[in-house]
Image 1 (cartoon, rainbow, N blue to C red):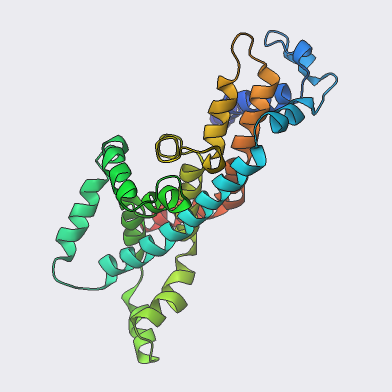
Image 2 (image 1 turned 180 degrees about the vertical axis):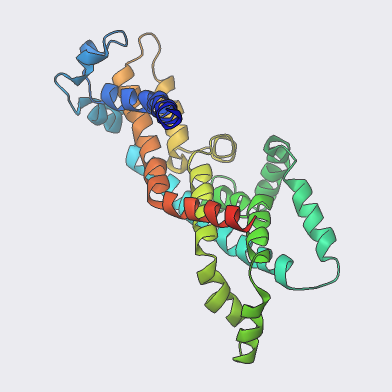
Length: 271
């Protein structure tokens, strides 16, 4: 009886979470005169791709998509490199001021991102990087969360592995990329997924640092497309554009959820 109630609650929770996404998918493939949020069954009749063709003809979706992909991929790669190196150094290398520096990094996690926007903008302006890819990528590479996450993961590594690699003639860097990184793959994959989704969904910073249509990302394109309506909103077109923005992040999560679960289970067992 307890299991039945538990599974019932889980199923109902899953349905409540998936229902908005499924409705968005159905509406995006429905003609404008068939859309009725009071009669969901009518959305499955006469599905069409006209909404997507209208979106692609109204705004340069492919350009926005490429911009978001470039920014998200390079931000994720940079975040992984910086966070794994810094996390390993804070966890396994003793140097003067290590704890103080790490404490300062932790403090930055409690600062609201909105506080940094104006100083970042002035910095990018002085570097002549406004409306460029580096301005969109660089701020997302450095973050306290990634360093903290990787440090905690590296602290769980047995010291015997390091001793064995030193006996085999490995230096610190060889030990890092030959032994530590392969064993830390679940944590690295988890950090990559979080970083990619966060960068993909970023709206405020791209809105401030870009001023040309050629540098807009998908979230900005969605806002521009929504703002093009003045009186009657075409929900099919709007949700088709929303699905284009959402689908890549969903795919990345589904492909990497195995690593997230493995990392959480590994941390739970060690805890």
